[in-house]
Each structure stands twice: as C-alpha cells, then as structure tokens.
Length: 304
Length: 251
Image (cartoon, rainbow over all chains, first blue to last red; front, side):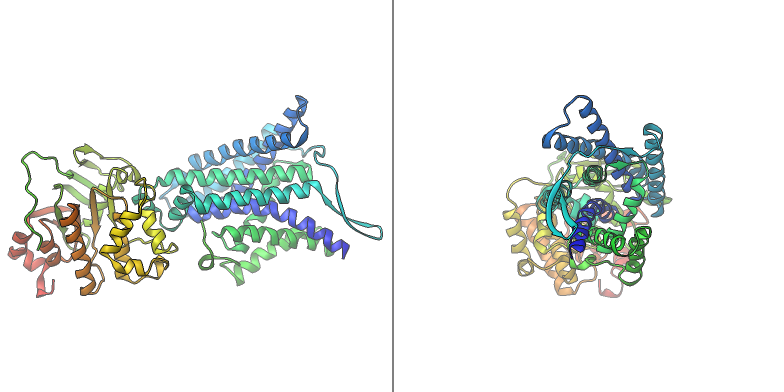
C-alpha cells in the first residue's frame, strides 16, 4: 500500500513532465498537421539552457532561493522559445505548401542537428548537477518503508498545473488563442478574416517550446543528470502520450502524459525496470490499433 | 432588379480595380490579363462556367495566389502582392467558395471571428445586422457551424463577412447547391444591403440569370479571359449569353 502510494507520487510527477512536452506535439499537430519530431530535442535544449544558467548563477554565487530557480526557469523558457521559433522559421515554413512528408523529414533532420550540436558544444558525457531542492515530507510510514513526497516533486506538480492554467486561459480567452483555433480549423479562412497565419504558427512553436523548457527544467531539478540524448526517449514518450490522449487535443495531451508516467512507473515498480520503455511503446501500438483517435480525440473536445 | 447603378462621376476612383492581372496555381494559368473594376456602391457580377477562373480571381484580389502580372488597386491604393491578412485589414471581406465555416465553433463564435482581427470596438451592431438579414442565424446561435444546413452555412458565411464592416464584399457562388427559396432569400439580402448601406459587392456566380438580374454590371469570364461586359440587363438579353449560360431556360 505504502509502496503503491510512493509509485503514484513518482508516476504523477513524471507524467506531468511528459504532459508538458506532449502539449507541444499536439499543438503543432493541431495547427499545421505535422508531427514535430524535433520537439523532444527542444525539451533537451531547455534542460541544457537551465543547467548552464544554474552553473553561471552558482559561479556568481547567486544560485540561492526560489527566486534563483524562477530565474533559471524564465531564462530557459525564453532561450528555448527562440530555438522553437528558429526551427519553424528555418526548417518548416519554407516547406509549407510542399508535400506532406517534407516537413516531417525536415523535423527528423533538425532533431539530428540539435543532438549533434549539443553533443559537440557541450560534450557527450552525462552532465550531473547537485541537488538544488533537497528533502521532502514524509507522507506515511509502513514498517521500514517511508513514503516520501519530495519538494522537487511538489514543485513539478504545482508548477505544471500553474503553467497549464495560464496556457488554458491563453488558448480559450485571448485573441491569440482564438486565432490559433481558427487556423487549426481552416487556415485559409483564418487568413481571409485578417489573421496573420504565419505569425500565429510561429507563436504556436514559441509557446510549445516554452512549455518544453519548463519540462526540461523540471527534469533537471528532479533527476539531476542530463545528456544530449535525453530528448529522444522523452520525446517519443511524450508523443505516445499525445497519441494516447488524442492527437490535437490539449486536455488529452496532459491526460496521456499522466497515464504514460503512471504506467511506466508502476511497470518499473512491479515488473521490470529494464522493460519500462517497452510498456510505454506497447501503449502506443495498442492505441494506434484499437483507439486511433485516442482517449479525447476529435469530436469530443475543443482542440487547438 | 436593382435600381439604377449609382451615378459615376467621371474620374471617380473605383473601389476595386483589377488591371491586366494574370494568375494561376503551379503550371496552370487560370487568369490571363483580366481587367475589371467595381465602383463604390455597385454590385458587379462575374459569370462564367466551372473552371473559368472566377474563384481564382476573388482569391487573387485577396492576395493568394499572388498575381503573376498586372496590378490590383483598392480605392486607388496598390495592394498587389500584399499578404492576405493585410489586404483584408484594408476593408475587404470574402464569403469564399465552399463557405468555409469553422466546423467546431458555434454560430456565434463564427460571427465573432469575422470581427476578431479586422475591426476594433463592440461587434454587437454588425451582429444585429446579420440577424436582421438572416433571422435563422439567431435561432442557431449556439449550434456548431459543422451541423448547419447548406443554406444556413451560406447565411453564416455572408454574416461573418459583414462583421468586419467591409468596404468591399466578395461573394463566391452564394447560390451553389441551395434550394431556390433559400437562394432567393440570400439574393434579396444582398440587394437590401446594397440599397440600404451602399455596400460595394463583387459577386461570382454560375447562375447567370439570377446574378445578372441582381447586378448593376456584369463581366463574362471564359477560360481566364474577360469576353464580354456591360449592364446586367443588357448582358442578359445577349443571345450568346442566353445560349451559353441560360440554356434550357432554367438558369
């Protein structure tokens, strides 16, 4: 019981990270109908920018307190958003109106470019970081087993919920959100109504990248080790989450992320850690075969 | 059936002037040196068979595709080659081919979308105008666009276009696929708008009979070229028009 509760806490905080990345996949799919295979690597960039910012702050003796962590987060969001914007500008926009597979191939290319760029500039070895947010609270005790809800997990959950709340308001209540919904449903008509569709698409990439940066920062804070390759697995799992939730559906992406996080965690806890990725990808295969529209796909929900 | 065309002061600036415009998609040349103009307060129709280039002309006026040659002037200002959203922000609205209603937005959201990026201020007056023209829209206000009938969608497309208080309204085949009674309702609404507000309209139609009766002037487009032009009634009386577009007498 205590063991299961601990897995639940771990699974939810991992799932939040997947959910944040999955939102970026689903948004881009909704608006231009392509899977942005470089999105996982944008998450990796976010983690690296955070790490570099942390190291710079530590060198300056400023890495202390919640304000410093907030600063790291904001710097990472801003710089990663710039990467997201540039990728769209350089690799996808010139291919708009081309055949459907063209931007997909371009995305795979960008993914390879980003990985190699980080590998060359930052080195291939995993980068460890000392724990910035130690400790936690003891939820319950069962004999020798202590259920721990760490402060970093609390931060992940609280921050993700906060970011998603802001994001939901942005999409449902603002002119940008309405422009995104219009572009998603009929881009040509949106332009006929005076909406600058290129700008709307750019901003979609910017927002998606900023959310991935939040996920990257959380990943760094929670697990403390990153390398140039973390974007691949996290990206594929977040993509699985987006498909499971129903690609194009925003609530679906978050729900899918939570489910993948929980499934992976419980699978590792009760069956086999070595095969945890198999569990996640089996879900992808099963969803695609039996539930191709996902849990909250199309008709039932409002999408962006 | 409209009244006399508004008097045109010689040298007055047309609302829309299309000057020897050529355009197309890829290898297909859809328009070849098309010239036409629409004066302020006029209803002008462009008739022609399927594939003559009518819809391409309306889209070219809106900037997509960009013209390959020639100039397009809106109230005397050159808008050639500008992006679509910038052209629409200058006071052009289009009810496009296929209506293009946002399927997962309600009727109300669709209407508001028409004002969203184009006009500032309270959209309520335009909304009331749309309801006055098409009371059906008010009844369907919270229904999703994708669930409307063809006629209701056409009304919504026109209502949405009017939400931006345009100077120039472009209508692409509003009669397509609709029952005669609904078509009459829509054409009556266009006539009323023009008479009451002096709205300038460029109407593309296959239904030459209806369109030429409504319009002050008309142009005939054949294979991307203008072959005839003149007052609506006069064109209607031409035997070659009767043979080509009114054959069988059912318009």
